[in-house]
Amino acid sequence: MKAKSSSAPPRSFFIQTFGCQMNVNDSERVSGLLRSRGLEAADSADQADFVFLNTCAVREKATAKFRHALGRLRRLQADRPDLRIGVGGCVPQLEGEALVARAKHVDVLVGTHTLHRIPALMEEAAATGKTAVDLDRKADAFAIPGEIAAHANPVRAYVTVMEGCNHVCSFCVVPRTRGPEVNRPPEDVVREVEAAVARGLGEVMLLGQTVNAYGHGGTDFAGLLERVNGVAGLERLRFTTSHPEHVNDRMATALRELPRVCPYLHLPFQSGSDRVLASMRRGYTRQGYLDTVALLRDQVPDLALSTDVIVGYPGETEAEFEETLSVLEGVGFDSLFAFSYSPRPGTTALRLADDVPEAEKRRRLHVVNAHQQQWQRRRHQARVGCAEEVLVESVDGGGRVSGRTRHFRIVHLDGTPGLGGRTVRVEITGAGPNALQGRLLQAIH
Ligand code: SAM
Image (tube, rainbow, N blue to C red; front, side, top):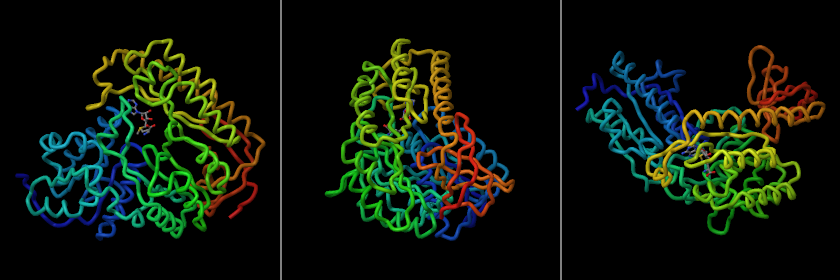
C-alpha cells in the first residue's frame, strides 16, 4: 500500500515526452484531455501536481532517459508527497507488470492504447493508494478525440491516422508496443484536420508508423491525401513515416499533383547491404530501394528526401557499412537520422550477437553524420540567391524568426513577432549544413 498524504485532486499537470512525433501527438491529446477535466498546464515538473512521462522504447537510450526522469521525480516526490506521477506509452506496454513492481511511487500506469483512462486511473489511485494500471492493448487507441488535442507547435498539427505496425523488422520493438495496424476512418481524419485549421494551424502532418500503408474501406493512402488536400484553409500537408514497400504510382502522383501536399518524403532505408536488409526483414533490396527513389524523382522532380539509417547492426562488416555510405552518396538525402543499433526486448534480432563493438558503432555513426553534414551544406549553398516560401513557426523577442520551406528546410531571418504563423517570401542569403539564412521579401498571407 502506498502512503499518500493527501487525496486532494491535482490542479495542474506537466507532460514530458520522449521519442517520435506519434508520442508528441499522444501527449498533445493527453494534454487536451487533462485540460478538458479542468487541470491547468504547468511550465515544469516542479510546478505541477501531476507529472506524466510519455515514454519511448525504440532504443535503449530513450528508455534510459525515461528512467533518469523517473528517478528525478521520485526525489521530487520525497520532498512533495502530494506529487502524483503517471507513466505511459511504449515502455509500460513493453515491460508491463515488471515496471509496476519496480516503480511503486508511480500512481498511474497506462500503455499506448489506454491514455484516455488517465483521469479515471488518477481517481482510482487516489482512492486506493495503489498504482492504478491499464495496459490493455486492445482498447481504442483513438478514444481521446483529436479535436481536443493541445497542439504544441503554433503552426503544425500532428494527426495520427493509424496506430501500430504490421511489419516484422527484426530490430524494431514497435509491433510489440503499439500492436498491429489499426487505421482510422478517413472521415475522422478529415474532421480532425478541419478542427486544426479552424484553430488557425496552417500545416498538418499525418502520422503513422508506416503511414503510406494506410487503407480504410475503399480509401488508400493516396485517397486519404486527396481527401485531406480538399480541406479549405489548409496550407500545407505532410506525412511520416513512409515505408518503401508501400510507395506506388498513386502516391507519387498525389505528391506531384495535390497542391497542398509538400514535396518532402521521409523514406528510411536502414542499410545499403542486401545481407543486412534481408536479416532486418525490411522487405526490399538495395536496388529495390534505389528503384523506388528513381520512380519518385521521375514523378516528383523537386522532391526532398530524408531517411533513417542504422549502423552496427549484428554482423555488419566494414564492407557492408560502406554499402550504406554508397547509398547515401548515390541518393543525396536532404536530411538523415542515423542510429546506432540497439538490441531491444522481444525482437528477432535479439537472437543475433550484438557483435559490432560500441566504439566501432560510434565511429560509423560519426562517419555517416560527417558525410551527411558535408552534403547538406553543399545542397543548402545551392539555394543561396533563390526565393523560398517560409511558414514562420517560431519568433524570438530579439527580432529573429524562423520557419520551414515547403521542402522542410529550416530558414532563419530577421522579422517581428507579428510574422508568427504567416507565410512569407524570403530570399536565401546564406547556408549552413542544418539551416538556411534569409531576407524577408514579402508576407504572402
Ligand atoms: N516505422 C518506421 C519504419 O519502419 O521505417 C520507423 C519507426 S522508428 C520509431 C524510427 C527509426 O528508429 C527507424 O527507422 C530506425 O532507423 C530506428 N530504430 C528502430 N529500432 C532501432 C533499434 N533497435 N536500434 C537502432 N535504431 C532503431
